[in-house]
Image (cartoon, rainbow, N blue to C red; front, side, top):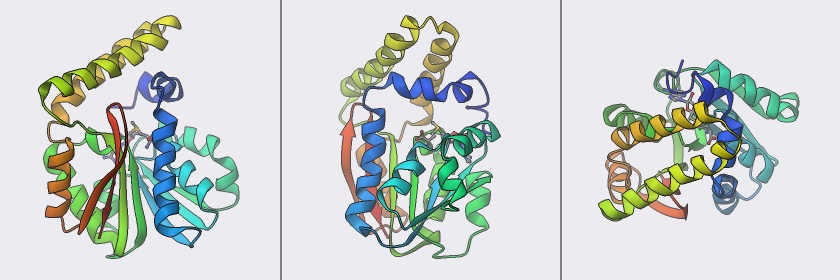
Length: 235
Ligand SMILES: C[S@@+](CC[C@H](N)C(=O)[O-])C[C@H]1O[C@@H](n2cnc3c(N)ncnc32)[C@H](O)[C@@H]1O
């Protein structure tokens, strides 16, 4: 179980998503990257840290021939995703697996997936574990397969980083204080401060370097709004 989402943050994730005005726009850009690279080809996609299913949903909507295996180690998140995406569950286009990302990847053969996507998950990992996951993602991808990661990525110097961080906190304060959700607000602020320490290497330049070091031949940031950005890396 993921210690970071086994609480009110997990239970009220839908509300938290609404705090960030560009949340759904950035999720959509993951779908658009799939469309651009695969059109309507039949593809098998792995979603790492699927949460309540926002990223998987974009993949399933934009490509009617895509199938998704969505993994998350937090049962609370998977149960919400199953409800939200019940029509895709019924049509067998998505399968959920409750598992730790590292263990799951280790259990898969080389070249098992056409595409790997992940949304707002990799930044939760400590540096060493993140590097391990990226190496495993590279291994389980088909030749020329792509990894699309939507995440909190910084750019520029400390002043830009501070501004992006403050804007994000303001977004939480804006909606959650209006709704008098003070305890959720407090948890998001603590979570975001912890993220600052965890994601010390989550800036565009370091992230690209890390992807190349794992073997990826290309890595491009294709979309950004505020602190959230989408990188597409090709095997
Ligand atoms: C911020 S949520 C993102 C959910 C969704 N991808 C989205 O974009 O809205 C991060 C998710 O990663 C999951 N997670 C964190 N560590 C994990 C791990 N080691 N293995 C699998 N899932 C993990 C959490 O349980 C949580 O649901």
